Image (cartoon, rainbow, N blue to C red; front, top):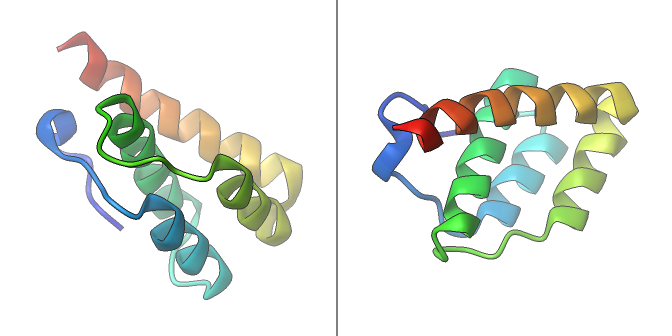
Length: 86
C-alpha cells in the first residue's frame, strides 16, 4: 500500500501483483486498496505500468462483492481527481 499524500509525482510498477496479492492475502482494507487502485490509475495514465484491470477487479469482487468494488473505485477516483487538477 502506498499513501496518496503528494501523489502527483508518484507511480507504482507491478500494480496488478501488488493489489491482487494484497486483496487475496487480506493484508489491506478497502481504503488501503483504494489508495493503491488510485496509484494504479495514475501509473497507467503516465505510461509507467499496465495494470490488468480484469484481474484486479476480480480479486476485489471475490473478497468484497460488487458493493466493495464500487466503493474501492469511488474512493480511488476521489483520490485521483484532485491530483489531476493540480
